[in-house]
Structure formats: C-alpha cells, structure tokens
Image (cartoon, rainbow, N blue to C red; front, side, top):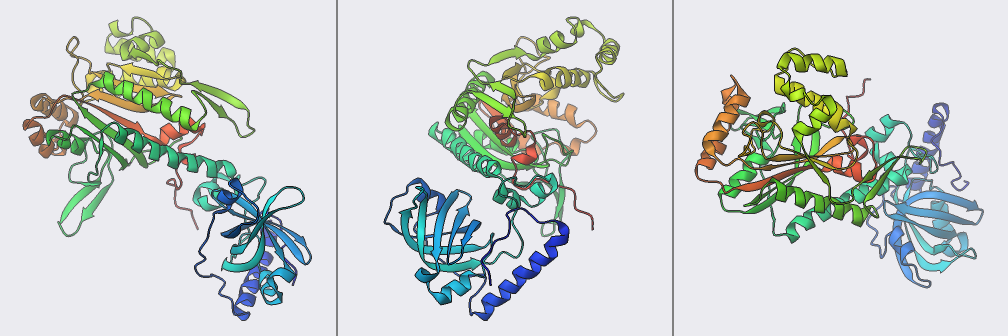
Length: 496
C-alpha cells in the first residue's frame, strides 16, 4: 500500500466518495493490524509550535499533532505535525521504526492525528525536525482536510464548520489566539486595579439593564417563566449597595433581535462599576484599556484594516487623547445647525431631505437618534466619546445638573460602531422608578422591584461601563464581521 499522497485541497464532489472509501479501508486495515484507529493517551514533552520556536538539536522528545503535509520519498517520509499553536517537521524512516510500525504508518493520511517519539535534528536545509523512533496512531481522519494554501473560502463552511476554518486558515487561528489573550489581559487589567471579578445570574425573573427583546424560557421546578439576561447591570449594582466598591463581570448576554455584521444574539460583554467615580473617570479607564490592548497585541495605536487581498482599506488611529463631543453638537453638525430649533414635524421633514429613513411610530428623540446612528456613528472611524445624550435613551444614568434633558454618559464610537457606553450611575430610587415606569409604559410588570428595593437601601455614587468584547476584537483585529471573531456564531438551521 502506498504512503499518503493526496492533495491538501478538498476534492471535487465527484471524487469525495472515492476518497472516503479509501480512508474507510485504511481504518479497517489498522484494526486488522491490531491498532486502535482512535488511539489512547500519548504523554508529550513539547507542543509542535513550542518545539520549533525553542528548538535545540539532540533532544529526546515526544510530540503530537495532526499531519498537515507529507512528502513521500519511498522508504522515508517527511511530514508536518501541527496544532493550533504551530508545526514541527518529522522524519519517518522505514528502517528506523521497523517493518511492523512501517506497515501501520502506511495507513495514515493527511489529517490524521499521531504521536511521534524521537530525537531533534536539523536537516541539510536547516529545517528543525524530529527523527522518529516511534509513531503512534491517535485518531484516524475519515474525511479530507481543507486546502493548506487557500484555507476555507466558503463562509457557510467557515462558520458552520469552524474546525475546518481553524485547520486551513492561519489568519483565523491567529485571530482566535489573539482574542483569547486579549480577554485574559482585560481580566488582568481590572484585577490589577482592585476590581473584584463576580458572577451574576444568566437566568432572570425580570430582564433588565437594557432595552432589548429577551429570550424566554421556563423553569419547571419553580413553575415560572424566566428570561436569559440581556445585561448584568442591575445585579452588579446590587453589589455596590452591598459595599463592593469595584466589581466587573465578563459575561455572556442574549438579545432576541436581529443578526447583522455587528450583531449576534449571544455575545460577550464586560461590565464594570466603580464606587465614587463618574462617567468621565470611566471614559479615562476605557481609553487607557483599549490603548493598552492595541499596544500589547497590535503593535501600536494605528490599526490597519485589510481586505481579502491584503490591501489596507482603512486605518483606525487610536492616538491619545481621544475626542469628546456632546451628542447634540454632533447631530447639529451632521443634520443642520438649526436641528434642535426645529419642531418634531420639521425634524421629520429634514430626515427626508437627508435620506434618513424613519418610521411613523418613532418618538421625537428616536428620530434624532436615527440621525445620529446614520450620519454620525456609521461615519466615525477614529475614537469619539459622544457625551450627554437624551435622558430617554439611557434610563439608568444620572441626569446632568445643568441640563436635565440629558444624562451624564458617554458612548464610545470607533470604526462606525458603539464599542462602549459609560454612565454616571443613577442612584436616586425615586427618580429611577419614574424613569423605568416611563420606559415600561403599560408593561409595568417589567420593572425589577427587587432592584428598586436595593436602591432604597442606598447605592453610592458610581461610574459604570459596558464593553462589547466582540466588537472590540473586531476593531483591534480588522475583522469586518462579528461572525469572524465568534468561534461559533448563530446561523439559521441548514435545510435538508
């Protein structure tokens, strides 16, 4: 039987059946030889990438990984052994491993997982390698791998079968490695500044902390309807009442709403609260955090976004200090300096002139918000802290003392998307109740009475922030879709 020679490219559909048949035959041949095709434990001394990066000759090593390339030279083979961290070359010689092991080895293909024991050496071309004295089958792959050179191009395969994307696309592997390191660094950043990491309920009796449609479920033992949280805010504020002055949570939240380039129904968010701080202090904190991440993981404060051909399409400049501008000034600059002097009908007429779509059911403040989203937010590339928005938009924030029609908040906009909101938190229980009642309208049952009860026990003045981790990673890595930074994004069920 010949050694594995198939291409790394996925075969045409008409050839797939034959390849699957051949692999199944090799599977049975391994069993006939008394070898478990799905292996057992294989203690290792090194990972492939680690061994290559810290290479030294003459080491006795045990390394495991997937066969991702193979060069058949008759009685000797060179193969690449890889995992998500990197690769190392192995040299397998018939005489060195023996006839029995060679017969087993010949049943292997690109995509199989194996363990190799041997000694490190440099080839004549200077390639770090392991000369195998033992090859152990760890898992037989029954399907061919994606192209080594082109990766997975079809977005349906990329998102539905992320494992193939990770096998075939170095950029995807690097992006998700970087995301993991960024999240760990965010956690470390807050812990180093005295914040306690906490956990709050994902199942909630009353979904609060944001205006969004929740996912509904049923708790059978309690005999009650419940909701997946849309935000952890109201529980984190209870901890401020309890005396925890600095808290944060890296959490999964859920919103039963649309899916788009920037929206996934299940998403990762950070929320943090700091007693005695305000929204400006929290803005300073977020600016420092994002710049810290950019310098640590992106090589500096200029973030280049590239297309599929590798051409730079946009550069996001995170150089400090970041601009801070009032919400109303930005809208007036985009929609006309007289915007706030117009009556509601005049603002609707102006929207038609500007090509901003609005619906008949929108409140007047929602019309202005639509203008902001279309003419300001979507066109903003470099960071801007948009401050003092209309109070109707943020019912959990403290009203401004000089203008009670706006609240003391910021919305951080980068690359056309909101990355982080931050508030001076509203801690007056009576004002908070009025705000929530106005937001709920006729659905008073949606008000979280337990939260209001907690506020009545006294919550200190505080600053709070949210950071959309998925959007932040998008901006820092140049990804153009939220699906590119979530390992398993939500997709419509495949038909058939």
